[in-house]
Image 1 (cartoon, rainbow, N blue to C red):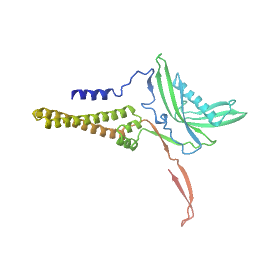
Image 2: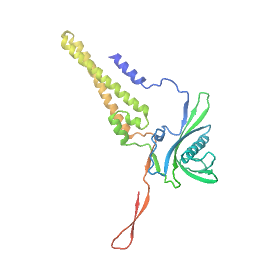
Image 3: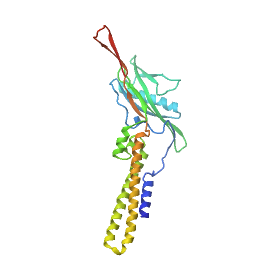
Image 4: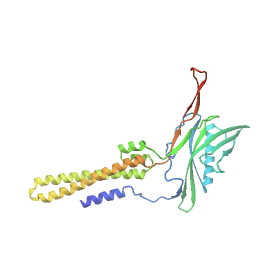
Length: 292
């Protein structure tokens, strides 16, 4: 019995230990978890006038990394719009308080064959990390989510960002414990819950099999009935403890999947517009409807 419990504890404790140290270390970051748009979960445009683009760049300072992102975006714009290599580009930006942030709008102006081509982009969000390398050097890794125009007059979506997931995480954890946590970006927590349930399920199966085995031996060997009865009771208690722990962990898994914040995700807001519709009534006039 002691050996089994020791094995279960060691398995649960060492299941997710890293095998080796990382060659580089993140010392600072803009938020605790990477946003969802960095994990192939970029929002879908609601119209064909623009597309989303995620860019990454590095620099010795955060401002340098941000501006390198603009250079990377410029190269992507050239490919998208098939700007010839002979064109020259000038980035003109609308900034807030003189700094690049998630409300900045950038217009790329290309001089191609004597004609100016202007392409508008908007920065929706930003995430950065400060990484220390083995030689002690610090480098900033900056990631930006842009909307890039595909037409001369783009209609960029309005995005808001939230860390709430609601039922999206709940129903996943209801089916597979820990799935909701992994979906929200808490991979280590999700794997811990899943591994804990697996270990407790194994404990239930093993302890129940041993309990049944000792009960069978009580019948087959009446002279050792008291000894086997005590052992059967012990394994019955272990089984009940495992059942209770598994149930408690499952309930925690559901509550955490429902209420805990996850990594930041983008939500597309509905566009506000005016709708003018003629109305034939008792009086002459028109009706004005504002749709949200």
